[in-house]
Amino acid sequence: MSMGRTARGALELTRPLNAVSAGVLTFTGAYVAGGEVLAGDAPAVAAAVCATVLATGAGNAVNDYFDREIDRVNRPDRPIPRGAISARGALAFAIVLFGGAIGAALLLPPAAIGIAVFNLALLLAYTELFKGLPGVGNVVVGFLTGSTFLFGGAAVGSPFGAGVLFVLAAVATITREIIKDVEDVAGDREEGLNTLPIVIGERNATWIGIAILATAVAASALPFFRGDFGTAYLLVIVPADLVMLAAAVRSLRDPASAQRRLKAGMLLAVVAFIAGRAAPFG
Image 1 (cartoon, helix red, strand yellow):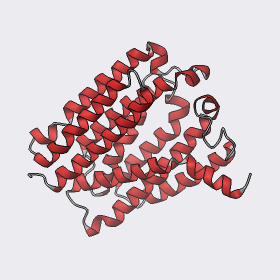
Image 2 (cartoon, one colour; image 1 turned 180 degrees about the vertical axis):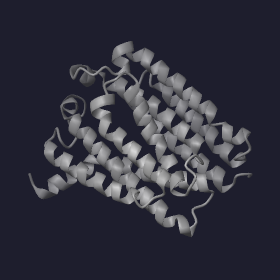
Image 3 (spheres, rainbow, N blue to C red; image 1 turned 135 degrees about the horizontal axis):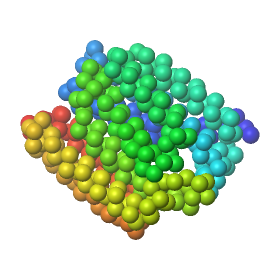
């Protein structure tokens, strides 16, 4: 196995786009919670973004390490199943990334360190303890995604300043994870996992995901009706909500396409919060 091939496999393990996107969410949390990122906040925000990117990459690598047998069925193109990197190499790489994430997190205020420690414990326990429990693994992933906004807010001293965005992102991610489980039923059943679609049926699980997302969409209106954000927020959040709802309904017949559209809707919702903070009364 060549060094170049191994390096590419290691990078691929991290899901670079997802890891960088998580960093962007942390920055967004800091911006939404603080109103603006001041020069004095810049080092803390940079450390929080770095910690998020590294921890997300490490979590993805650990997930691939534990899921390597399942991926031989569901995702044979991933680095470990196709032989781009060994399982032991993937685990060692994840440990290095976790070390970097911890180092960056230690530069942050106590609240941010607390969130980082809690999330790290969840990441390490996810695959072995939570992933195979019906619905529980979905909730854990949803919380981890949404908490990037809390983490960013904590970096500027306001951990709950992006609370509504946390709820929206967490719940939308839970729906997306349920849809992914529907798509992965074959491999998960072969490995003996008890995911929600396996336990209650694929269609029932999908409807639960749709109902959960509808709750998040309703919550997304709160910043406008509370007077936190104005028209600029409303003009973006409404299309975002419609995209996410349409994607959730589409998952009844095309889970793969629905996942991509749901993710796009989530990113549009993030833009809505940025717009709302930039022009709160516009």
